[in-house]
Image 1 (cartoon, helix red, strand yellow):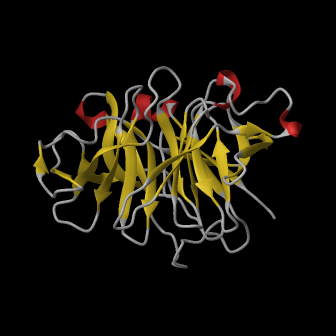
Image 2 (image 1 turned 180 degrees about the vertical axis):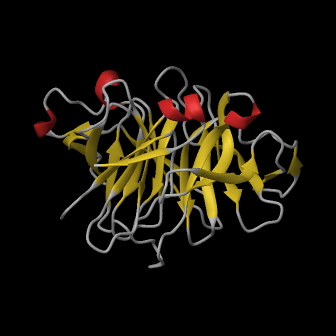
Length: 280
């Protein structure tokens, strides 16, 4: 398979595409990538609570779809309104579900954080929290959730920063959150362990049509993950990025001739507020 990897100088996570790299779960063409950004125009606030689209042609961010600081919020279980701006506080893990037109997320915190989603079907767009359904119950350094996607089996998957907990969740009428356990390094990984803070923390996760998940770490390492066995296999390292840049988000985009991954780095959005696209 001919894979082309893109590099975007911006932070963000994710439209996931999961029935074939480049195709959505229901077979539709994927033309929208969603991202969470800081409100650069508002003074450089680097809490990632503003949902925008990403223009994949030129790498620029769109208008704010949902403002986590002021937007309406509701309980998923009771429909009760919650305080405006109380749900989306600072996320590093988004996953778009095309069958429901929702963006699922969890806040990036070392405390227990509930599963939430942005409902794109309502006007105004609102944030919904599954109150009492934390994705990660362990707390402390490394247990924040910063990688999330949906897979071809219809489940959502999230991964703790230290890869000690792979979490699977359902999004139907009955929500189930299941801790599947710690990831296991493939024997071929050698010194590039999926648990190593310097090599493998941060980044994002996407999925293909065959049940595989792909983890792109902040330090440019790429792993294939079999969710059933929890074995993570190091595939290689993204080349062509400056050593000081980190890859903090990934998406799969449509392409008739290849199956590209799109990766983002954080540094340029902090400096300019722009997503500067570079392909290699």
